[in-house]
Amino acid sequence: MKKKILGTFAILMFALSVAGLVYAHWSDTVQIEATVKMGSVTFGFTEIKASWDSEDYMGYPPEKHTAVEVCELFDEETDVHTGKTVYKLLTFTITNAYPNYWAINKFTLDNAGTIPIKIQSVTIILPAGFTAVPSAAYPGAQWDIYDARPKLVYNLWLYKEPLDWGYTPPSWGNCPPWEFPGPFGDIYGVRALKGNQIEPCNELLTEICVDVKQDAEMCHTYTFSIEIEAIQWNKYTP
Amino acid sequence: MQNKKISAIALLIAIALSMFGFVYAHWSDMVTIDGTITMGSLALAFDYVEPPLCQEYYLDPNTGILVPGEWEGKDVGSIDCWYADYIKDVHTLKEGWKTLIIEVDNAYPQYIVHTTFKLHNIGTVPINICEYVITGEKRDSTTGAVIYDLLWYDPDGDYIGELWEDVDGDGVVDPAVDILVINLEITNALPYQIDPCETNKAQIDMDFKQEAEQCHTYTIHVTVLGVQWNKPCP
Image (cartoon, rainbow over all chains, first blue to last red):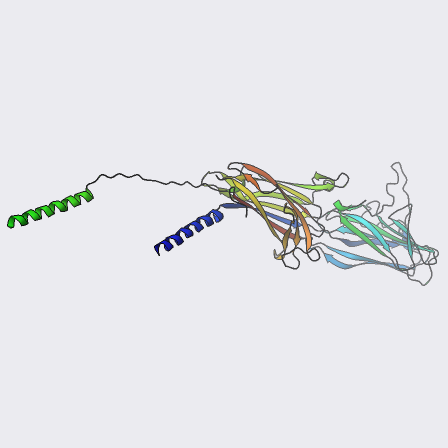
């Protein structure tokens, strides 16, 4: 009996020593704590600065007010990071237009986020049967719009305002193209939106012009959409 | 008769005395074993002398090379890093820090940040650096509430991996549901050993993916596990 007890005790001691060999060790840790606060890219319209048309060109009293252009902003969006609000949709509506009538709207594209952005693309979207032909002379700034016949019905211009004339009138100038030749070249010429950079809290003064052509049909309605895509400045593809 | 009795008693006394004398009267000597065990200390820390260094980079698309700073010289994102939680090993009296804090602000996709840090064995026992335990959360930047846990995905165990938002909350990366937000890499290859008083410089790199959500906060916790060198890593 005593031998059995002694034997059991010896086995227990051996088992404990083996277990001690396996589990008894020291360890220590240090900690890395990383916090990443993401910025924001929020891009949109903020303000319609001015609009004018061929009927009140150069500020002269118009002979007649026949056509009407109306520009409005919709789809409000607030950047939760900066608290700044922009609009995602600008509508430009012209009624009672006629050949040789043009209308310009001046507005701002704003960077309401915290990351610099660049205009990556401008896409013209037309109803079925219509075609937008990019201008070779003003790439990215002017498109000839043809209907299904096909006939040129209007020219569409979208461009960075060539010079910061200020936000108040004079809102003058006709629809492009116009040239300011001089010793330094056409420094005030038409500039496409693509590639323009907008810093946070800054804006890009932009104009859109619709120039109605001879073959536009009476009592018809022409619609278009323009999608302007902005991308964080370091991901821009020229 | 009387004399015999007296003689017997005297004999018994003599015998008894001789017996006691045999028990108590002897020479003795002894030796003593005094055991003193001075334990070492196992203490892993960030180096007290050399602060961490954090640097932002961008990938130059023309050369494919990482360039310090930000694209076109802008100052958009920012990174700061420092040590916290001071520690002093009572054994060696060496000093260090237990926590490395990295703060990245106004981050954006393809913003790249590297942080170099130095591990120091301020104890007396060699340490094997065994494991980085990486966890994290995506938080609402206003309330701080956790939106998703972050899952560490590193199938080959080389600590060049990814952090995914655990959208379905099942604790397993599922590319069909979960969202990849951060690439993360930690050097050096594990395990490696740091002897007492020795240091080893390492680095944690992060770059942020397209799907990292704007105006949100990502917190990442990395525990560096060190085990005494003569024991296997867990």
